Image (cartoon, rainbow, N blue to C red; front, side, top):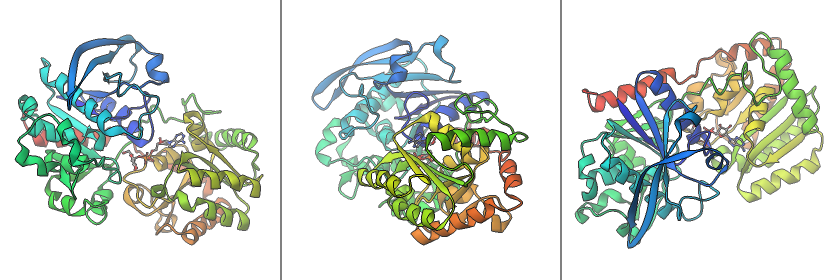
Length: 471
Ligand SMILES: Nc1ncnc2c1ncn2[C@@H]1O[C@H](COP(=O)(O)OP(=O)(O)O[C@H]2O[C@H](CO)[C@@H](O)[C@H](O)[C@H]2O)[C@@H](O)[C@H]1O
């Protein structure tokens, strides 16, 4: 079975968030199960693309509205590829070769990506058995495969679509409809949602199957999906939730080259201590206090707007330390920077993106905070568990599917709702747990919870098979 994934991100080539982690792992695990799974993504200007070798496998021109753009399909050279899957890049130098994955003007960029990818796939000798699109940046692919005259040869190819985050939908004005390769205009309604062209909505309408990244998020979307609730309810028969996994080769405390000291379940205490020591030294925190951490995008979805208040209150009332790694909304970043002055030896923040630091924090922290208002799956809590760090989570989405509260015989701390008092109370519970007899035993035990991709990669293969039993 040949599966072609289309995505804007893929780890380790270009990562903004969890989408990249999924694309960097799922194809590898699918290949281990006997499939031929590959990724197609844009060619950005970054450290990875500038330090690796690529070969051009296709050259052509796309027409975007009235403008021609030359493009190439590049393949990462085999001898440089240790990803576990083939990866192809759509190189449209004028639009996609930018320093950042996302910019303020992404409509044309990602349309160019989708059209060039489909042009290349459509002319190929080997048409994939399944095309699997991820998030709104690839949301017009299912529509174009079904409706654009140019791609009529792809009409019978099953197309799966995964919603990693329904908050972002890629809306643009109908004035730009001329950018989409020609289709029967009476079908324009398939692109529309509330008087805009909505790539996420179009993908839900036109894909053969729609998946989300946890079962619970699938249920939640019917009630809250940033305006798409009724569409998801109407289309529920082709919707299914499959829990994300994590790449247990990358996220392995025994071999992780990014952490200060490697450790196993047997050496967890000394291993975590060495990583915590490094963090405390680097960020001027007291090693004897329980260390609470947050890693992620500083946006409302993650509860970040409340962090200044939550942190102030918790640090004032408890003998704890808090360390934050993240970037996002500027006013939140500023508030979080200013807070350092108030609690110089109990709190610190690194505003920015740092993969290595994130690994050390998962390894060295005692607790990981995830007060997300919405969390389609969440990978951080699974990385935390694997690194012996207890997650403190709001009971939503994939967090509900993966974290069981201590009160229910589980191993984590769950709260219901994202308010300052709910989260502060959860932090207090965690501090008490830190001092209890079972804390060390629990954190060693959680390391062996299996969240690897094995089961979920198979679930995706089963889904593809259900679309075409002859695969
Ligand atoms: N400043 C920083 N420095 C270093 N690393 C950082 C970082 N900020 C974030 N990260 C890393 O980015 C990833 C974030 O993954 P998540 O799945 O938690 O969130 P995200 O909201 O991006 O993903 C969306 O897609 C994924 C994948 O489906 C869903 O799990 C999730 O719920 C959904 O919101 C983790 O690997 C984390 O360590």
